[in-house]
Length: 354
Image (cartoon, rainbow, N blue to C red):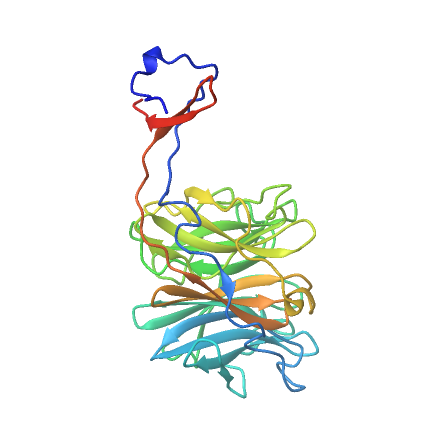
């Protein structure tokens, strides 16, 4: 094979030069390895004929006092939702309490209930964002607890119909667990004027009073793609040196829900760096395709365990499933290189110096 050192004497028929950066540390897939289910069956299923008879789904999970603690949405046959509590020593086999830990009590929760929990620990307090639904309005709410069982409501934190671009309901608050630039930040779901659901961002200095931070979604829908109809925050984001990693739930025009990842700037949570070009997780099992709402995997829980992450998701608005993904080693930017294709169709690569 000829040496490419003397390129000046090399007569190419085709010259293709491009610069390529490999192993991008801020790639949306660089935090997690491939996802796989670690249970072929649901880890939580409907039971009885009372408060969790119709569906048990959309879980949030946190590690507390040596156990995996799950809060999950439980729905009765009338469609009213409450939050159930379950514990596990291994993250797979869960035991539920016989009664819910949060039930509808206020005028913004009555009849519809309390839905779709997301848990984050800040200091010695657990904060729970959830949707309060009264069969008319769905609004993003907050509660706080020291033990994950007894909850102190803080009220509606982002009212419906009063946003900048989100002119409808508000849901799905994913709070970054540390302050950035002196503020707490939260990704949330809002409904825009075209009736699509997209991701916005709000900030707070005290975790109680929140202000919308932008005039447009920070993670918008993409027409014609897997996230063309719904772009909804999943679990509380991960803070990494390279960026803020947000797992999000996406639905297309056929309302098939899949999972994807977005990365935001570590110093400016409003700034999107990258996002998945294709889903990383999708409905496959029968119990993910058939239920109260077909073809749904909806991730709300994420726990780091040694060299893997466990992801907890609602399936078909009826069950709870669990998947895992290995952690990925931190990697810096790779080298740039150029490629030259010569008249003899030999491919050479060499460092670029631009």
